[in-house]
Amino acid sequence: METKKLGNSDLQITRIGFGAWAAGGPGWEFSWGAQDDLDSIAAIHRALERGVNWIDTAAVYGMGHSEEVVARALKEWRGSRPYLFTKCTLRWDASGKITPNHSAASIRQECEDSLRRLQAEVIDLYQMHWPPRDNGPRLEEAWQSMAALQKEGKVRWIGVSNFDALQMRRAQAIAAITSNQPPYSMIRRAIEAEVLPFCLQQGIGTISYAPMASGLLTGAMTPERAAALPADDFRSRNPEFREPRLSKNIELVERLRTVGVRHGKGPGEVAVAWVLKNLAVTGAIVGARSAKQIDGIIGATALNLSPQEIAEIEGAAAAAVAH
Image (tube, rainbow, N blue to C red; front, side):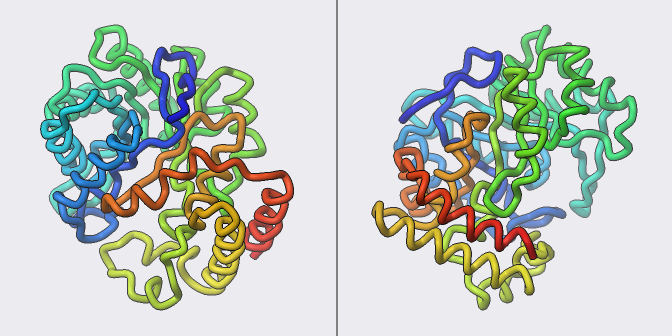
C-alpha cells in the first residue's frame, strides 16, 4: 500500500489508518453503541493483513477501553507492529461524562495511563485531542507538556487534533507540530479554507477523521436505520442523520454509488478516495466494526477519480452542504 511521510516525522504511513473509536464500546458520552471486542480485534487484524500500518485511538474512547482492545489485538498479531497514535486532554467520570483537562499534570498522567493500557514502551504519535474551549493559555501549557514528553522519550512525535490555523501557530511557537487531525469529508469541508493550506505551507501532516461522515456515506445508512439508531450511539444526536439533511446526504450517496460502479467500488470507497485526492491530506482514518467492513473500504487507496468524476461528486456534495 502506498505510504506518505507524516509531517516532520520519520513515519511513513499508509494512506488509510485504522480508527478505533467504535472499539471503545458503550457507556460513555460519545459512544457508537454496543460493540463486540472480538469483532474489533478481527477488524484490526484484517486491516493489518491488508497493509494498514497505523492505528489511531484515544484515551477517552470507551474510557480507556479502546486502547485496551488495541493492545489485545496487537498481542495476538504476529506481523510487523503498526504505529500507535493516541490522544489526550479529555477526561471522564464514573458516569461517562467527558470533561476537558489541559493541565500539565493531567497530560502527564494520561500519557502514563495510555502507555500502560496500550502495553507499549513509547507512543508513536501523541495528539492533543481538542484545544481548550476558552482558547486560553491552557493551550500553551498543554503543548509545553507534550513537548516535554517527547524530549523524555515517552512519545516519538506530537500532534494536534481539531485545531484551527491560529491555534497551530500558537503551538508552533513552543515546539514543532507533526500533524493535525481534523474532520474532513464531502459534507464537512470547512478546513479547505484555512486549515489545509496552512498545514501544507508549514509542512504539518494532516490525518483526517470521518472521511465517510461517521458511516453516513458508506451506502449502508438508510432513513430507517438512521431513525433506529440507539440512544447510546452519538450519531442519533447528529443533525446530518436527521431530516432535512438526511435526504440530501442519501442523495449524495447515490451519486457516489454511481461513480463507484464504474470502478467496481462502493460509495464509501469513493468518499475516502475523494478525501485522499487533496494534496494536504497525508492519510485518512477509517473506522471499522468488523473485518468485512475493512474489505469494503480498503480499495479506496487504489481509486483514482477523474476530474469529471470529481466534478460530478462535488456537484452533489455542494447540494448537500447548501442545506
